[in-house]
Amino acid sequence: MVALKNKKIDMSNSEWLKEYYSRISQEYRFSLNRKDTLTYWALTAMFVMIAAYVELLRVKEFSFWRMSLLAGAICLSLRFFVHSCIAYAYLKKWRFLLEQIEKHWMTGKPSLSEIQNNINKYHHTPRTTVTRWYLVRSQLKAGFLLVFLIPSLLIMFEIINFPQTPYKFIPFVAILIYLIYECLQFVSYEHTEKA
Image (tube, rainbow, N blue to C red; front, side, top):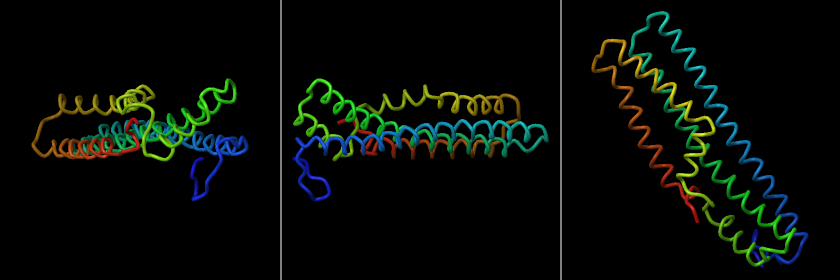
């Protein structure tokens, strides 16, 4: 028996299992859509940033503003990246539960009690089936490596080709502070912790 919404549900009831499967399928599709949408937004923001940077360079705008644009782009991309990793953690959790139910329907294994344990372990607790490192690596491969690489190359171009002044590095301090903040949020977020 599994307690959902203060009701005791008999896990052996195949109708309940079908309804649960349908509900988790919707959660899976939502997580997949969110992960992909955040990746698309990050890629779009990168192209907008490139266009804005080229225009600022063309009109010979003050270097501080170009560096600020790049810093803002990196911070926004980092935000999209962290939320994309979180969406991917949910995606992996829902996919695991769906596969367990599908295997049960096809072969009878895992048993209903094993499915119940997995539901309690993953659905009713804020945990996922993969490590944080797996989430980060997968999302970098999904397009975020490019999203972080382009602004980083432009920052190096800016440092090498234009005169250095102390205030020019203020955006770097902002990036560093925001990077630390996002990393702490991601590491402390219990939904990205492997069960």
